[in-house]
Image (cartoon, rainbow, N blue to C red):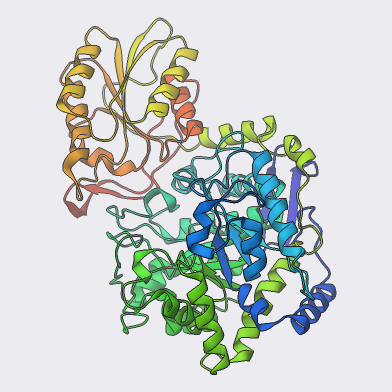
Length: 603
């Protein structure tokens, strides 16, 4: 195994990375690998002094409300009976906390760092405890459409965009930068990368969160990101959602999907990215709340399936790290059993940690009872706790639990990181149609209408075109344009030199036909006779639903970094080099390919 850095400073600087080999070394935030003997010694001595309550607490990773650890927040009381995050951490001896914007956990780097340090202080300062165990502080910073922490943290366009770029070096660098910035804010775990192979274009929950519909490309990208997050970023990574969420038309947040792949199809399509993650040394694997009859015909979700988590993931694939459930608040895991029973069954299935139990007090008591009655064997409980503690020690949390707020400016959103993100994103934009030769567009002096999805998206795109000399007018019409909005956009197009119209999941009219308004908008603008450039700012599949859109670009993301890149492509400053990481089928005919995997035009 060989690791090389062509240029690197301690926690900053651009990361031009080259890697050869399969696995990433365990490292702390400063890059040191904790001594295995010390890790083993700390874990063993800690477990010997832990109470049953403390051991069970390590199995829970919960959300808490509040932007700092010590200020009371009334939203915590119905869930935990306590108001401050610090009290909750201490009462339950929690193993970890997960951050969201809706819990007020993520506002800016300074606030996040303060919250992280306050929570760690609470965890390490539990009264009447004989042990000091740091928390894992986690977030879903997949980038792209699932991004919890916005600017000034460095933004990337997400997994499918990286798949379009085809560069494992870029995927690794994006993960390394993301990981370094998270660790600088005290966040120790990123629930990424997504290892699902998105073979279903109608997938409502994965889509562009997946690298590709090709399992080999997805596997290569997943392995590269594991190396980036863990080897250079200093954070734990978690491959999700096992055994594979890529071929579902149902969202497990609100319903219970069933994957109908045969065992052979699972081995060919779903398994390779997870196996690649395991080979690369992934710290964690997150479960999926879906049924997979070919792997377990009981009807239970994978999260509660011992044949899947223990039989397949542990025994067949050889995964030795921490298995964590997806959020237990999601409907896909709550349909068959009560919340307390779900927690017990997940542990019996093979999970080590439970994410976001909606009834912590009841779940905690149920696990205590299951251990005391022998339903959960104490040796199996200890094995779970040992895996959790070992991971914390190996990733340097015992030695470096706290973040340095004075170092934030040297790590988060540095000019070098932002430049790397822009360069990587420039290599992902994909041109699928340019029938009339509209692109590249001569923008100096051009009068351009920017219409379509997204207040910030259209504004960012208009600003990008202006920087190249265009005069722009904006008509933002959202995801469900009304007839009046369409008519207004058509009127605004009159006399313009060009129209650039953004779409966002214009294909998805299954739940409501309101998104069909995006299709009507594109058609109406095309009928004006003014040259129209369509920019799909999320799923590339929109083109199949837009008739004969003559000029079409896919960005895979509405993140500003992706929109700024597409402006450079439109202006001709950047030549589009991205190629499709998925097949795009004909609308309504999944067996007929409109644009094949690997397709992409240039200038």
